[in-house]
Length: 129
Image (tube, rainbow, N blue to C red; front, side, top):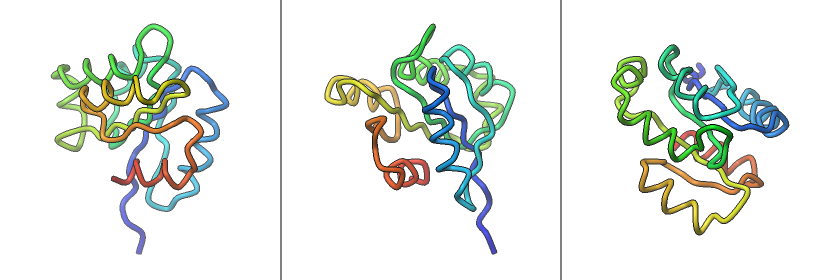
């Protein structure tokens, strides 16, 4: 018997990164990508309309970055009502300075911060918690 799927939302401006993450995540029996967005504004809009268990988001995106989107999601009453879990699990990724972005992401409530080039198993472990 397979464990229930965790719904994952991908947020990154680069469609190639989103597609790579989708291939890795959708190959898992317990995970399913339920949406993809290119920026933080659309990430928030998606969270207001759809139940999501985990968000994988780039720290730097157009219009609104991952850290700022995470902060806004934590404060948004509509998002809190839409989500199944008490606290949305968030994995932020960065292609730049992890030492600079990591502490800010964790302070904003991210559960994990990874390099964009992390091994797929690291990404899966961060998603699963």
